[in-house]
Structures are given as structure tokens and as C-alpha cells.
Image 1 (tube, rainbow, N blue to C red):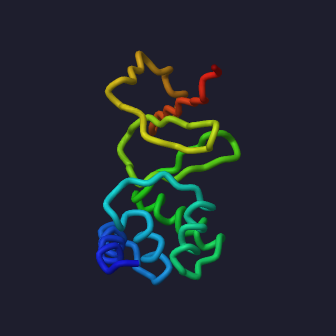
Image 2 (spheres, one colour):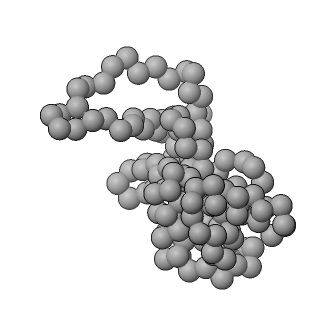
Image 3 (spheres, rainbow, N blue to C red):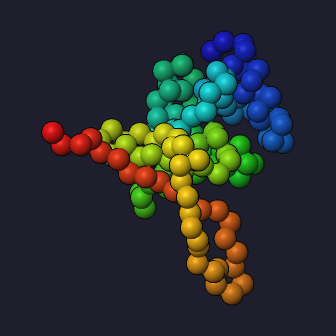
Length: 140
């Protein structure tokens, strides 16, 4: 991993108040080291860490992604009840889920219009609205 990616990952962690451990720095460098937003699963980040020669267990990747979400560095996007993606872009924005290859990408926010939401039940408030637009290749 290049020093610039490590520095960017370390800065990302410390700005959120997270202790920059070796494993957190390695995963952060993979996530934000090039300055681009990422949509990852725990499994894809684990594979990327192995590919970079980092010794990190899958359980550590899951725990670290959870800590990054809790610190506000990432958001979890549930595609269905069994598949979670983690997004380094934390503002409210919609996503495309490409069913054919299991990818999650950003969708253009300015083209999504939500005309209204139901009132939250008594004692609750709406914290956010997730929009996931499922796509598949057209037949033909």
C-alpha cells in the first residue's frame, strides 16, 4: 500500500475519533486511500485486504465496518434481508443495485423525487429513507 493511501486512511479515522490501529488503517486505506467513494461488502473488502497482503480476519472486517458505520464514516445499505453493502459516501443518496453481478452503485440524486412519506408512528421519527433501484440486463 502506498504511503499516501495510508495517510489518507489514518486521517479519515482520526477525524472521526477512531483509534488508528494497524488493521483499521489497512482497511481504511483500501476504502478511501485513492480518494474515491466505495461500495463494498465485508467479503469484498476481506478479499481486497488479502490481495494487498494484509492479515485481517473476516470477523475483524465485519467488526471494523460496523465501527466505521457507528463513527459516521460509512453507511450500511441493505439490499435485501441477507446482503449488506457499506458505502463511504455518507450523504443521503439513492443507489442502483445491479442484480446480474451483485454491484451497488450511486444513482443520480437529482432524478429521484419522493412526493411524500407516511407519518412516523407515535414516539418515533424518520431517521432516513433508503432508495435502492434494482436493475437487470434487458432481454434481447
